[in-house]
Image (cartoon, rainbow, N blue to C red; front, side, top):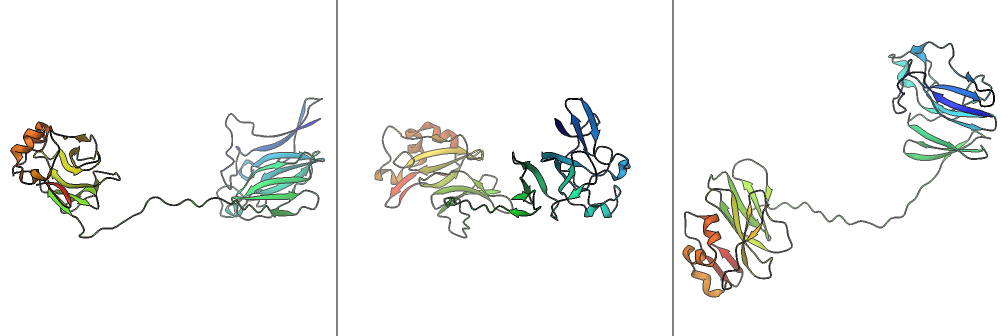
Length: 290
């Protein structure tokens, strides 16, 4: 019985993905006579380390050993010539001798071969494709892969709005502004800076107002099924609903002042503490903090 080994006699292992390697860490090709427990090195016994190529993934079939190597170019490590080397499938007799190149690919990306039980077919990856080698004829053909899949719709859409904000409010520092566009609240830099998204929902969020300390943004949202006052921090986190009040916001609140809003929810006054009068009003188009 014969066992095939691809190994290096060092404490570290070689890397199969390292192209054009030449050196003492290159993988050697060995055979083992199992019954006699003897070993024989098949290749590169007298080759200088600076010219030794890798010999990977040995496969045994019908007295031949197939393996992957870029040994076609016999050049020294570090030379321009060695960069022309490409990985291909080679074969050699189980008793040794001269190796023979079987495939002629030029991508340098031939990996992971596997041989059939009868030794007649070798399949392998070549440049992200699947190939099949007939070991009798030496002919290699690509295996066509056509996978039918359902079309996945892209649920994300990049939309650019220019001058379409329906409401806005400057931060106390005046360096940023909170704006509402098409039912969402954003913050933008008044000079230069990134856009921040405050809300992200299928509800309508409008009329943002900054708190006096610049840490919170209040807005009107119908997330609960009716217009309510909500507040979030400037990162769009820690959402809190500040209403309902003891009574619902109705049309009669159209002229309510900040003091009326304080009575409906004391937390609103504490978080907004606006320097100008605020009110919640309702009309045919909805509610707003003003």
